[in-house]
Length: 224
Ligand code: 6PG
Image (cartoon, rainbow, N blue to C red; front, side, top):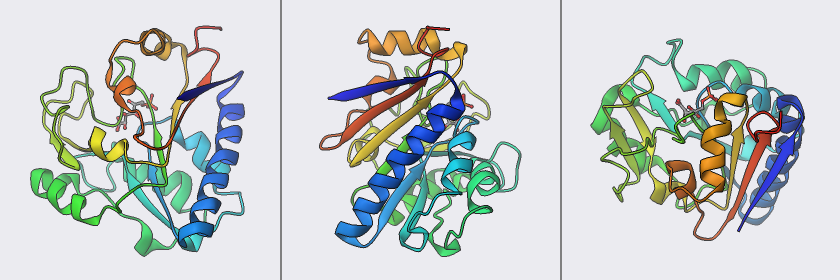
């Protein structure tokens, strides 16, 4: 079962999603003393991160992971870690040892190492969607989509740079709460294909025992 929430602007989307993330995180900490949160890559999440940074979250009980990372230095302009550091980690009282950077520069060995660092289940997984319906670094037609490994090395990403690490569908689908942030007219065609049931990578993220939400702006919903 999934829900789609549509917003006039990305900022309204981010504000609403931040409320949900706070609810999910606080419940996880209340029940298990810890909240494991996977952050999305790309540019869309910055709007959410900036809102989250201002909220009263149980920061010291939160651990941060990445849905995917590019094989670039952690301070490179293409680094998802760098983006999250600028838009969230540097603005909120995050415990630095609780930031689990994805060592994509170590490629397949990095995938193995990162899989050892993952919790049994993520409490919150935040994801984006590309214009081809990819999510994380799980791209349509990729040979790795069927892998049951926890973390995958990708060397043929059609979205540069080509080399990345990504959580697999198996890992993503173990989450308690999955939320997609999808914004911009460029995403409308892919989102309509997902809604119509086409088995794009985004559509294959369906938590085994968790909630699934699509937070979409009007442009991506094809309503602009
Ligand atoms: C990446 C992302 C990727 C991203 C989508 C949307 O590292 O490229 O994880 O899956 O979420 O491509 O990217 P934008 O938010 O920049 O549109």
